Length: 433
Ligand code: DLL
Image (tube, rainbow, N blue to C red; front, side, top):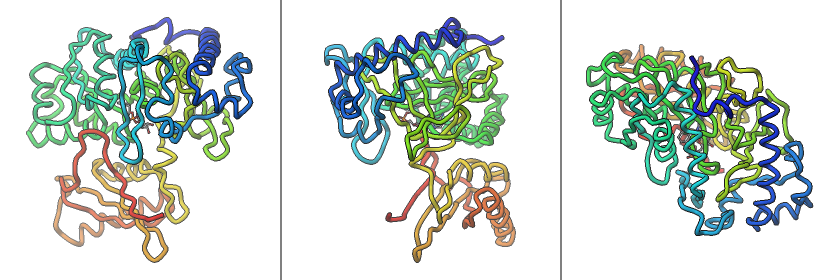
């Protein structure tokens, strides 16, 4: 039977959700107007005042916020409460430009952890479970978020953080961990390391995994489920909005339920900013309606997905987003064709490869080149040039069919691509544009 952490809100009627969203939005806009001069100026520039926002139907009148705004307002420009009320910061793992710093009050941490607890219970977790949190701890939100959620559920929590892979496996086995939380690429690596150690899914007690922080394909889900002998659940979130738990998968696994009591989702056309109808693919925009310290209105995530309000068999009523297809900023445009790394991953896994690959883009003689390095699995490893060439050709054809684009494929030896303990780096774009 489906279990819920907070059934009264996770399964509330649409009318109840809309009523709550209306009340919270009106209050939040006033809070931001009064306390965040940076955003107030944006509203004034657009000729909007709190009086114009009476319900969620007025949301589209508000100006957007983007990552550039967050960088410009760094560090304290978007803080919505006096410093004495803020108790925590977290920060993005971004490697370019200024880091984004997000703030939390006690209330904000509480609601964030509740969202993570909802995800853990949706994955079958209860206070009987042992939950190993192998996301990084520290400035990254993965470890602290799932750690807090696991406590709220009452699981015995193992805060391993990422890294030290053999010890991770030892703890899973010795402490009977039933739930694993980490990035999907790290879960795949744990599975691979287990195999090397001569262990299979029956040697570990895990039953579920809660994986997110990066895009991963359905094929990768199947792979991880088989190697670890678990059901793998997706969890989505971003530092700017709190961290993991903005949305999560239920047992039905057809999209991720967005915690609508805290976050209002919109899908927009990334070029025009126009709000798109349900079911259309576009950029996800969030308004946080219950956060105090870092209350973002209409924040552009750059993540691409669509929304559905179709009834979910799990009983939850909150809107679902599709697995993010990619980001507006990691969509590669190669010879004019839009390419998402996730499409390449799908082709590779469909041909029996694991998700150990690197996409290298360059520009030679004014023409874009796409080079995909893929590891052979130990089972398929060969040094017979003819065989390798035939396998490469198969992948070139598969990629051509998926992308409509000719790529160069290079098969490399097993274990030659660096493994990641957090988010995997899959794309190297050497073009100087
Ligand atoms: O990655 C928060 C998180 C931690 C989510 C642990 C899930 C689990 P950031 O480092 O700020 O926060 O990165 C946020 O990562 O805008 C997406 O592009 C991507 N992302 C997060 N979850 C998913 C997912 C955390 N399930 C950015 N699928 C987001 C695809 C994801 N992309």
